[in-house]
Image (cartoon, rainbow, N blue to C red; front, side, top):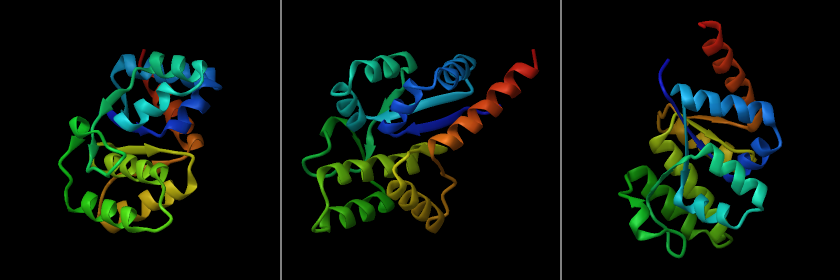
Length: 167
């Protein structure tokens, strides 16, 4: 079974912290090498400010921290940025040019662009971020899947069952 690279949006850690069965299954899949959880350095900063139970969940899941694909003023850290390709540049320029964009919106955009370039799946419960990521992935012929938490749970259950049926 190939490794599934999953960018987890920050809100998903809240759900995992409250779902011990899925949390345990994810840990098991990580140990088997079936799934790799990824977050960006932007999320690492957000998580540092989260309640203790969320920080404990993230620590136990130990996601790999990846640099963002592209940068935005007042959001990115220069040492954590990968060179932006044309897709990342277009998305970043469009977001930064919008009058009502906020730093939080810019961060969400960088997280989704990073998922498009370095993951198989992007998991978020933010409907706008999910819709946008799906649209951009489809328009650009990317194989990125975008899931809400419920879809992640279903996939985790299937992966876990597939791994335990072989023993």
